[in-house]
Image (tube, rainbow, N blue to C red; front, top):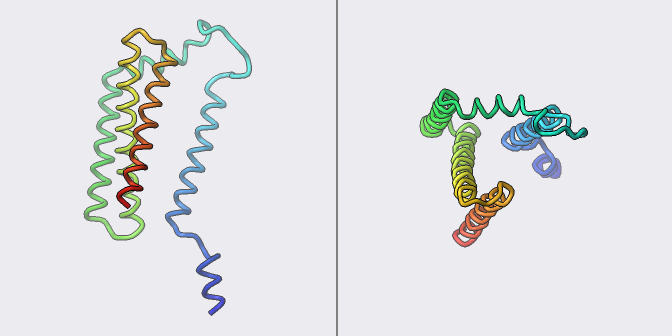
Length: 154
């Protein structure tokens, strides 16, 4: 009996937790590698000399083709997640599909709220740092409201 308690307490972690830890670990390493390689952040160079990569990224982001492909991939991903959730097997796969759809929805809503606030404040003549602060403040406030509602309704 003591062995069963030990195995349940210290045994193998749930596959959902292992997958989550692996996914976030990979995302963290990828983010660190991207930031480390994006530019030489240890040496200051005037902005006019380092605009090549940023100009290409800006041109890509303003391209209608990029937006079309991003929308199609997002729609197919959410649609596939919905089909997997409804018709898929029970257990880890179903919960993972539900979690992925929830995260995508939250990120899309938060991004929409942030970008709308940022652009609105920028068009009123405020600087970009203040506009980013206003957008982050709104998204943070919405997160706090969501947590309060969850705590009150749980």
